[in-house]
Image 1 (cartoon, rainbow, N blue to C red):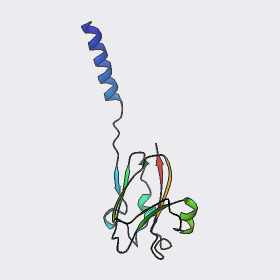
Image 2 (cartoon, rainbow, N blue to C red):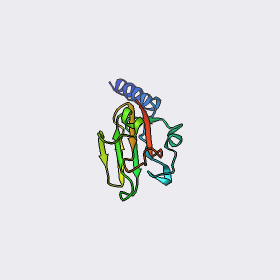
Image 3 (cartoon, one colour):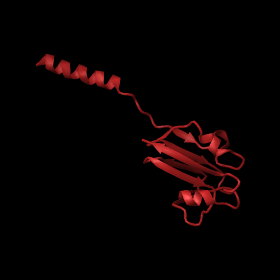
Image 4 (cartoon, one colour):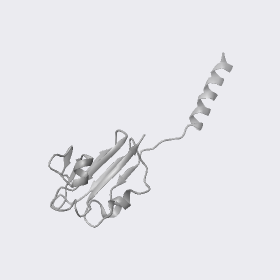
Length: 124
C-alpha cells in the first residue's frame, strides 16, 4: 500500500514539474506615459502576447481623458456614441477574460483620430 501511495505522489510531482506555470501579466498601457496623446499604441502593443487572465491598466488624468471599449467598426471610425463600456476613473484595470479582439479609444474631442486608441488580440 505504501508503494502505491509513493508511486501516485511521485507521478503527481512529475506532472506538476512538467506542466508550465502560467502567470497573468498586468500591462500598463503606454508604459510610463500611460493613456495619453502622443503615444503610438499600435507600436506599444506590437510584440506583446495578450492572454486570457492578463490585465490592461489604463492610467490617465480624468480631467483630460477617458476610456471607452467599443466595437471594431466604431474603433475604425472613432465613433464613441455607443460604447460597450465607459470608464472615467483615471486608473482603469480591465481583465482580459476571454479570447478575441478588443478595442479601446479615448472619446474626448479628436483624441481618437489623433491615434489615442488601442486594439488587442487576446489568446487562450
